[in-house]
Image 1: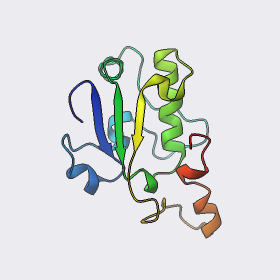
Image 2: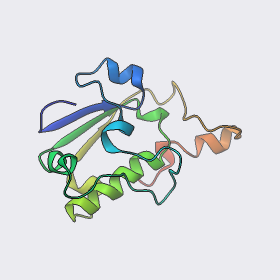
Image 3: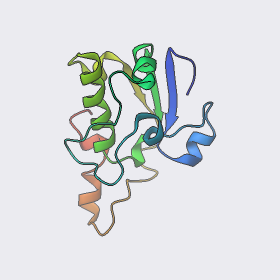
Image 4: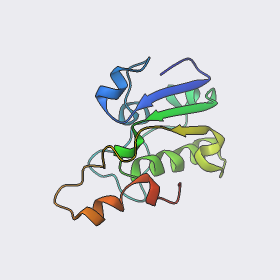
Length: 127
């Protein structure tokens, strides 16, 4: 995490440790872990300190997003739209996704290759 005008984070703890702020997306945005699905929201109350920080944020840099299940970024999108009362993608905040999309796929236990590929961000309506 950097300053209040932009946030920098990653999907994995290893990648996050290499960034200023040392924060994962799940930790920063309170993305559900066990019950993440296509209608999930992040656990960010509208009157929280995190919501206040997000109101000051102009851009989010999310590294290693290729290893993230698409429901994570979708949950953040829905949450920011709700917090800001703005139907633009991510409530109007610019989100920059980074990483090598051919390097690693999301971990989905006991699934076929096609099923795992269908959970990637590139198969999401956000893409």
